[in-house]
Amino acid sequence: MDNNFDKILDECVDRINRGESLEQCLADYAEYAGQLEPLLRVILQTKETYSFLPSASAKNNARQRFNAELERLEQRRWEKQPLLNRIFARPVVWATVAVAIVIFIAAYFGFRPMLSPTSPGPSDVVSPVISQPSPVPDPEGNFVFLISDDVNAIEDFTSVNITIAKIGILPSGDSAEWLEFDPEIREVDLTQVKGEKTQEVWRGNVPVSQYNNVFIYVDNVSGILEETGQEVEIKLPSNKLHINKSFTISTDSVVSFVFDITVIKAGKSDQYILQPQVSDSGAQYKPVEGKGKGRKQ
Amino acid sequence: MSAEADSGKTEIRYDYEIRLTGLYEEYYDKIARYAYVHIGNKTDAEDIAGEVFLKALQSIKSYKERGIPMHAWLFRIAHNLVVDYLRKTKKHKLVPIDNVTVEANANPVDIAERNVEIEKMNRAMEQLTQEQREVLRLRFFGGLTSREAGGILNKSDGAVREMQRAAIEKLRKLMVAD
Image 1: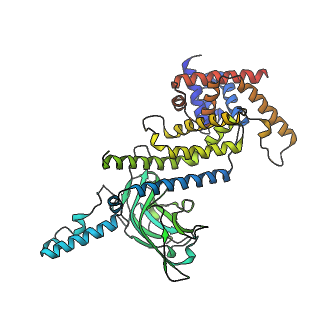
Image 2: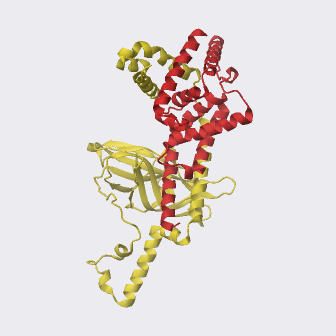
Image 3: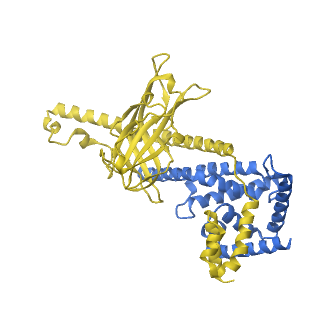
């Protein structure tokens, strides 16, 4: 049997795996149709005979175990980091401390010109964030990033304030690099964005591409319980909350991506935990003509 | 090792974890199907599919970017788990008809016909070599390309294509003769 026929048959297997019909493949290789057809029918028959769709509950249970393991590994990695790294990993805290030190030194030496509007500001001098070419905010931008809260334990609180230090989106492709940017609005009270409500935190232009992962870096979270009026600890399993959700930035639409976060109450410990809600997160597309109008906030 | 190299490795591992998470939706079903055709038990096949992702996460350090693609690497893990399973249970390798789930309101004639079909297919599959069966499992149920299947079987993609064609032809002859 010639090598060429092996390749044609192989291509037809790939096409059937992708959902194409036997007829589509035969039409493209009419000269081999006589040889191909019986073999392709055997392929379809084999797939049909052993067809099996795993149950949704088994898949979800396995997914939960996978997510729990992922969180455990992330937590362990975080704990293993030296103290200095942990401090550097919290850019807002570090920036605040660094700015305070610079102001103190400047004041001490009477070096006031350093603080004048024409000189670089303190945060420019000491910012620990290595600047990558990151997108800049633009009110007419093609990408809007919003925060929302899926109603779980949020009703227990009068306020849950989170501070977002950084947003990142990952283009598709093996060698893709994260595109990171600072939110324009850093503090969001999750009790104000329950259910369908959202809070826009960034709007600007990002490169046209397919993206498949999103993260936000939460620097701080504090919640006030309605019942006691006291602040209560809300555990943050990881400062980096990430979700795997695909969306496409194109030239003909404005994409509003809602990152849904939820506060849940762990059954046994009564501990409140902040976590991303993948099922309620995702992108909405609006044609360019309609951008900026009728946006749900 | 320097702190910089350490941090670079952590970043790479973190990226691998994200990619693995991204593969879950698409490949859980395919791995479960691949395992099912091997072991003939749907519940255990689902467990194996879940276990594959946990194992992959725990051993993500051993994944090499330049080797086979990550989704093909998952099938290598699946293969090892299936082999372990079969060794422990010493169970049949093909789908038994009493394991075939049918719709609650299915026609008894349809059920009987389907059972006959499975028996026939099982008999034909048993006539193939072990490698031929594995090629068909990886290609038809795992959805891997010949090159990816070759990466797992340590064969060239040409050798996989040839084995695939021979296996399908043999299956056809056996099905017609039966």
